[in-house]
Length: 534
Picture 1 (cartoon, one colour):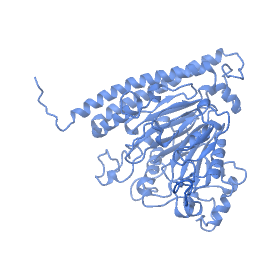
Picture 2 (cartoon, rainbow, N blue to C red):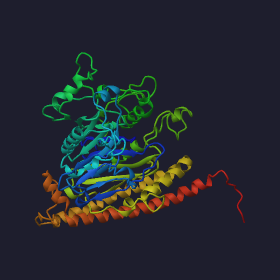
Picture 3 (tube, rainbow, N blue to C red):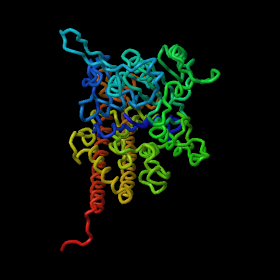
Picture 4 (cartoon, rainbow, N blue to C red):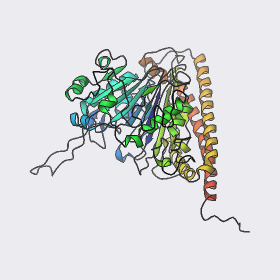
């Protein structure tokens, strides 16, 4: 899938949280309705079978509960995409990446080979399953990990054993760390810890531009990789550095530098960093240090100020505002306005922003912010993932168009607003501001209720069910203790009630916006006539 990712280290975020966020964009010419759900341990399969690649994998026992954003239509598989588990570990999967012929020649993709002929007849060749991919990653990994580092280790092991049929980037976060994993060919991979003081921009390209192989093959403090990566690089002459320059540059070795990158990928990184670091360098004009077509835009960068949830939403909704490349703008001309692929695009499926807050008790530490549809015209609102069920407005997405669920209502609003952008922009902006403020108020109100519960709680854990337990637990805890804390039944009901209130208010405001933009767009119809009937 064509997506855009931003990762924000804990010292770069406004409140000390780790933040990982990604747009899931559907393929050109397609819409992919999405649901936001809770997957309970008993709903997790014991043996997994991929719809696309037909690979079958036995899964570990005792999975954790987790949230996911699967497809409403399961004809191509689950595609869980983004979620948080009971250990307060989040995962975003995946950012489709680009590679080059040298890598694929050295380690080809593991693709499904359909059966040939009929079983029992001469010349019959049985089917050979393919590897794992975006369809599978979240389901195979998130329920079984207790730290972000464990996420890298589990996915890396699966890639080495089963291979993959595509290049992908995957993010993992816990309260302390963010890790970014990139696949390399069919079986190899690299992973790098995001610096605490930095953010990372990922626009469908293999992104890591500095990598310490010695650390990855040794202590693994900030880097990890497949066990034979050093031999793989040397054997296939993949290191393109001159005079043994260090550190190793994976983007040069494993990535692409095609003309299409300069239209589709690099402009998005340029615009995100232009917004978050406007004064660090000159971004516009012939003397700009980095231009939209630059191949050397940094993977990680320290922002000029702390990054907020609203900043994340803005950059992942952006369409080159304030530049000649904005398709809705007045700068430039028709050529420049459609020169580069926007970040906020028509075929967005969903945006998930996972925030792990270090200053909150474990049960309410994680927040999963959600948006559906085309980002320039939707809103991003928070929900607590450590609950027993998500609100129906976001969960019950249908495969048919209806204004009764959040996905399709946003899709309808976007289609109307795009055709009347100037006339509806103010209404959309007011809606985004109001619902965003409502979201922050909801989180604050729920936090107050959890604080009161913490003050009143003086009981011990029920180690069998986790139904009751001490939840005043801001201090560091072991993963098993975190899981027990997040299973507190009374706290979960408080958070579920907050989620329902958020969804109810969200539907009310989204209905109002639909009414408004439908009227405005209708008045702009070409067959309008200003004389009214009497």
